[in-house]
Length: 116
Length: 116
DNA sequence: CATGTATATAGTTAATCATCTATATAGTTA
DNA sequence: TAACTATATAGATGATTAACTATATACATG
Image (cartoon, rainbow over all chains, first blue to last red; front, side, top):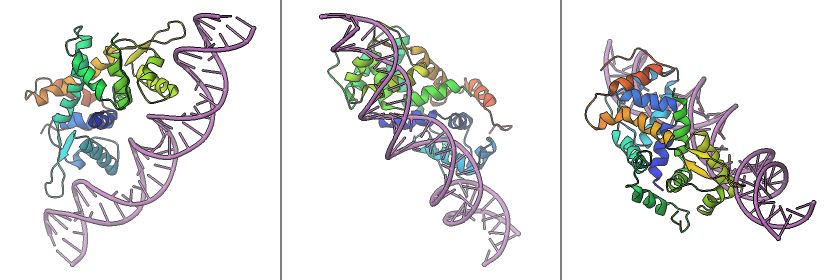
């Protein structure tokens, strides 16, 4: 479940795409500006941008023939929210385990799940 | 760069693997215990565990013939640390942009990068 | 309108992946 | 040692992916 996280994490798994995100964190950029930052062809960058846009990590507007790309922090916040469920674990307290159990319950295949 | 994040994010992109992580957040579990939680075969679960272990997200010990799996929060903390560079963006302040610039500098292909 | 610039789309290829079945290995116990 | 339990490995298959080249589309400007 939480199918949107599949796309988000998959998008973030590619170093070129994380680098694009790093660039866009400094401000908007057009496709060709981004192409200049990498040793990759324009269609390849466009494909990466499509993946990032599908994952909701960026949005694209339209200015003349250019398509300025903008970082969309909401998708990153979703990752942050997912992490939140686990942050308690490495912080030693277990207050937010309820959320984890919820994720468990909503997962497609599951069993009773006995408390250890 | 930060090749370890490639593996980590790729591992987290699969819903079954995120579900395994959710299970393990409640405590250790053997392979067969995890198999019972999913409608997938044991080799498939073992493959997922291998991916999670390679990404450093879990570790496996040895008790008799069983291989108890344990969540390793360190890898999740690495994701948290990566996110930290961007948290400032959705929080409205730009104090931690230095770290982002660092990521930019270390990325294999890049150009001058003018400040907007 | 013709040309140039910015971006998208189509089609190809080699690699990776999630899943399965079948089988091997390792440890336990009768 | 034989039989059972737990897990790993091998091999096959269909789907997805990241990259390329070539081409199409859209807008701008002479």
